[in-house]
Length: 260
Ligand code: PXP
Image (tube, rainbow, N blue to C red; front, top):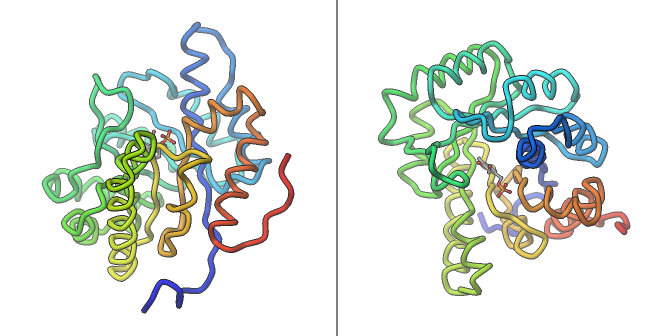
């Protein structure tokens, strides 16, 4: 089937509010409050809220997760490393979705995807328990066939493709690499769908680079955080989200309402 033959489908937007907590924690204050950001994002039309509880608690705290979960009506996508500590928290919280990510203490942000293939024995029981507890498990992976097939064999219903390499190439004006990465995401999103996975994408998206990703017809959801929180300083979070939503809708060929 050609891409053009797929029915038009609106992309879901998951808003990652981690970096509201980064600003709060920079001063050890009680503000800005990520719970308030989640409520604003919901009002602005976000389809879900993503929050990453890191092992070192550098931004989101355990209390934030509980409060966000209790304060929003849209799905919470709880991002976590595949550790027993995080598993216990997820099993207690029972978020709508759990996204398993690789995590290194020294990294500034999530670098690279989870090794779903190499980590099979460690991940399989965790994914099963999370599924039984009612959370939809997503694996944040590199867009490769090996990782997609590993996700299927692990029984994960969702994968999120790491778009960082494209976004870095775009920022560095490396058009050859950016184009090659987009092609890879297109092909792997297609393969993922054919394998029965729901395919999401995330990492590094901005107003300038989102459109070619949003045009990939097999993608169902984008998760975007750092840029939106930064943009909120200038325009407010609601406007930043509305503008991102408009760009995503336009990429899918939907008429979008006016945005200031
Ligand atoms: N998806 C996942 C799995 C992530 O780890 C992150 C970064 O925390 C994002 C999406 C959002 O990336 P960004 O903050 O660069 O928009």
